[in-house]
Length: 88
Image (cartoon, rainbow, N blue to C red; front, side, top):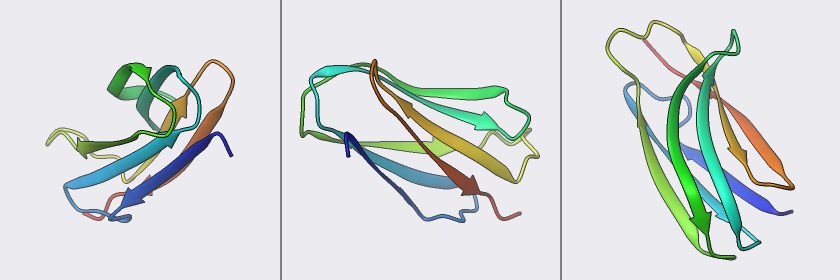
């Protein structure tokens, strides 16, 4: 597995921590999409070192009323995604 991904808590109320490890020296993009396919956040965009763990925090904007999101971690040769559920 080239990408390890953990999202805690999930479901969440206001904020959640997204932790990922990439097993490649590569460029990474971490994004959040709503269930209509619209990108609602870019959490990270940059180069990472193989084996280093990164932790990001996603806070839902007050105006966002969606309950389900998709977290997407993308490199040049791998994609990993996981659904995130927001509790209102």
